[in-house]
Length: 225
Ligand SMILES: Nc1ncnc2c1ncn2[C@@H]1O[C@H](COP(=O)(O)OP(=O)(O)OP(=O)(O)O)[C@@H](O)[C@H]1O
Ligand SMILES: [Mg+2]
Image (cartoon, rainbow, N blue to C red):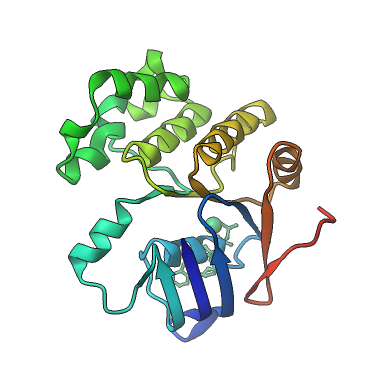
């Protein structure tokens, strides 16, 4: 699904990640953890080609990201759903239009009928909010809307960057449950978080692995979490 080989990334000469080796199998569920500023978001950005590695190799869905044409990148990105850390929406569009937007911009709006869309919205518990505008939603509702938008294209890989960051425990568990359900449907999930309680909650339900960024490198954490 996703391989990094001796991958490094630096912002303007400052190394953030060095010699990262990773092999994420299809259908797996990974947590990505590490203190603030260690490079979780940077690593996820490498995984959806918002950033190109400054060293080494990134292979996504069996394609080496080096030398990909713009159209190839667009095609690969359609198979990746991203829940961004800041989960921004277009404030003058309704939530329904915001969530449908990835389909619209890729010319696939005909692919999701109204019933399937309604099912998706009911699944995230936002049926009553589809005509509302983004500023009218609570943070938990916005996070669930961001998740719905990330999966509206039915991606194979879901990258969620601290999707429970500012939420209370009940809401955090709700988001986790949704991600676990997606994983059970065969989707590969990488969830960046520094919430150990969330990781423990997931471990009691499914097989997960925990990646930790230490000294600019990504390590597989032991069973001690
Ligand atoms: N556009 C940028 N230009 C220069 N440096 C950057 C840029 N974006 C991030 N950085 C730096 O790269 C480092 C890693 O940032 P990153 O956002 O990946 O960390 P993070 O682990 O996601 O942190 P957090 O838990 O706070 O979200 C930080 O020191 C940050 O200041
Ligand atoms: Mg981050």
